[in-house]
Image (cartoon, rainbow, N blue to C red; front, side):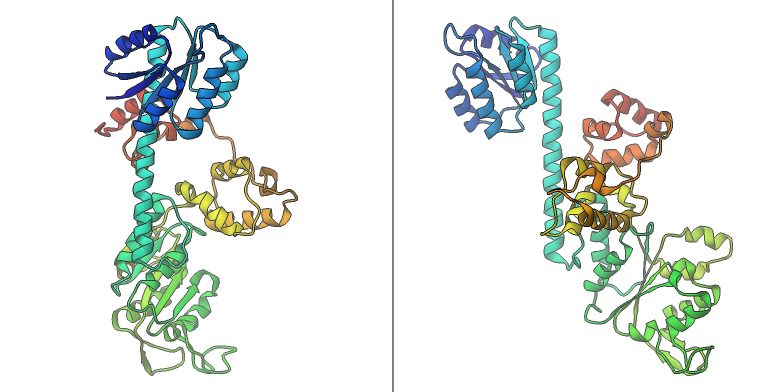
Length: 446
């Protein structure tokens, strides 16, 4: 049952409020002075405070109430406070509301307005407590990951990132091939490094190859090596990435760009561990853990004949889907501060908000570039919005931008830990509007 502390020297006021709230299953306790109220707050947890502004006879300035409010705010910054007084002063009200007061009501009060304010504040307080509990759980989970595994210096705070990293740590112990999917610049190579760091091959080499950066006619030589004279310009024998990664991990980025001929040879290596250099008939044997990554739709490429289905299933023994940075918004500020470094200029609050609002089509790579440029060009003691030089988001029709589909609603509920008020705020909806959409999409309310 919610508990409210009433701090008022008038016992009749406390009794009237107690009767009103008891009819709505809200428990109250009464303190007749600021000192007693502060002592009770120190001894017991309350959901809300309703305080008078004057405690001395014939005093109407409200100064005592201002002092009490600021003492409560200093010691319990998240505790909502409603100010109640027979002597209303607009300047005092504005000043204290700016300082964090939840509301300022005159005596005699309107029961309906007071109950509405109290219920809204109690619901908000419960949402904040649930959010705090969820964040504490997430913090403990992140700490556990850091203690149990080598996370290769990855920076993250979003539950979506944590799920991918946790799964990467679990699958690292086997030698099965792993396919990491996600957009360009999202951090797929960092996930591959985590797999290597926690695998049985962590003492071996970690070799990365971007298949999209190598011409199609040279990709096989890069992978498998080539003998002298195997192709124009091959003046001497050279080893390929598989040989360089023997006993370790080979990370193949942009695997969708591999030619069909290269795909066939890669499939054979994955199945047998054997291959030949270009221009050679001698088989070579290696033990390599292959981790591949792509931003392409490989099933669609299979349907149009540009990617081998048998290779896809061989690479995709375990798939790790890394979301775009726009879907991991709690990662944005930790990553930005990481890129700034300990000696970098701090972000202004407005700049931090701008970073969180941006859609990040270039993902983590774009964020790093924005921060590095801003650090170089910022003239003041802090990085301001103008220093970030972010493009303005394109305007979309309101109906398209604001109407969430089923996936967005489910995602918001998961991020909010099932707290309806928090999920509704995330989606820009009222609680009732979210309930209607949940019913429309068949999403259970429990």
